[in-house]
Image 1 (cartoon, rainbow, N blue to C red):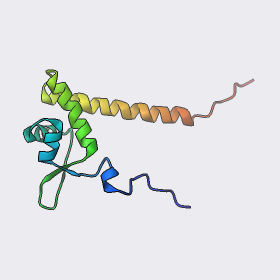
Image 2 (image 1 turned 120 degrees about the vertical axis):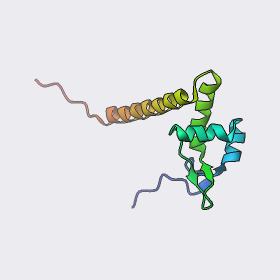
Image 3 (image 1 turned 180 degrees about the vertical axis):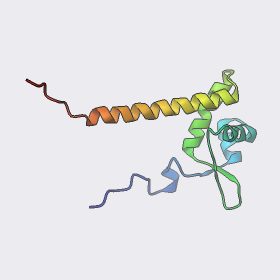
Length: 112
């Protein structure tokens, strides 16, 4: 039996589906479109483009943007907030991989 896809069958259930326009994303985050553009310029999030060239954001990207907004609201510069969020994301991924590797490791019996 072939492996089942881990991707949701409904696009609206997919965290990576670019469902939100820039205006709607900014509204949901309580920020401006300029803030979202700044996040893109700092390579924190890269929105997908619609056929008409408009920026579209996923729920995952909105969560990342919300974390950056939280840091900016606390007084962190936008550029620095982007770097912090990138490093947090890298750390989380490294910890996940480390956990998987530890779980996969078979205990070696002591030699006699």
